[in-house]
Image (cartoon, rainbow, N blue to C red):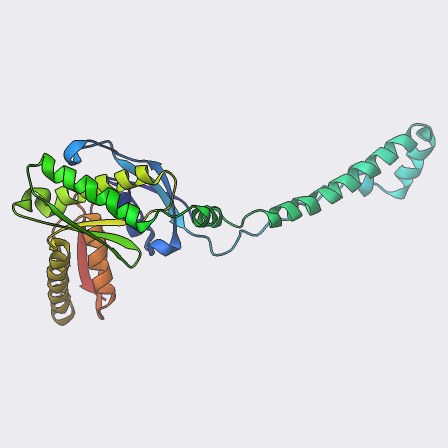
Length: 290
C-alpha cells in the first residue's frame, strides 16, 4: 500500500485525515510523524502537523529470485569449446578455475541474502511496536500530578478558579475541568479546548522523558460527552430520512474527529452509507442510501 501524507492543526487531526483517506481503523494503519506544530501560550499554534500513513502490510512482499544470465561460453557448442581448447590450454586453465569460483560465490550469495532477510523484522511497524513495549511506563499518579498542576496554573493565568479532576479510564487519562466562567476555555466548536488538550499532551510528553504515557482527553464540565450524544442523535435522525425517503443529506463543515464519529455512527446503521467530501478546512460528511 502506498503512503499518504496529510496535514492538520495537530498530529491527531492529521492522523484522522489519513485514516479517512485510507478508509481503515487506526489499528490497521502505520504512521510516521514528519512534522509537529509549535504551540505557544493560550493555544496559539505556529505551523502544522504533517503525518505519513499507510495500511499495515498483512504479509511480507514476495522475493523475486534472481536468475543467472547464461554465459556465451555456456551457450556455445562442443565444437567451439574444442577449437578454443588447444589455443588456450596454457592460459585457459587458470581462467576456467576463476570462473568456476566466481559462479560458486554467486550461487551462495542469494542463500545468504535470504537468511539475512528472514532474520530481519517483517515490517517497520513490528520494530516500532517492540520499541514501544520496551519503553518504561510513566506512573499514572505522576501523570495526573503533571497534568493537574499545569491546568491549575493555566486557569490562574486566565483569572479562573479551575477545579481539575483527572482519572484513568480504559488506559486513557480523562481530565474534566470544573468551575465558573469556563466558556472561554471551550471556544467555538471546541477549538480552544482542543488546543488546550494538545498543549497538555506536549507538556506530559516532555515530562515523560522517553517513557510511555497515556492519551490525554481534556473536557470542560462534560461538554464533550454532551456534544457527542447530541451529534449521535442528529446523525441517527438524518440517517432515518436517507433510508426512508431515499434522499442525500449533506452535513455542515466538521472537524476530522467529528467526521470520524459520524462515520462510526453510520457504520452501526443499515441502509445508509457515509463519505467525506471537499477539501480542508471545508470538508463535510455526506449520507446516501446504501
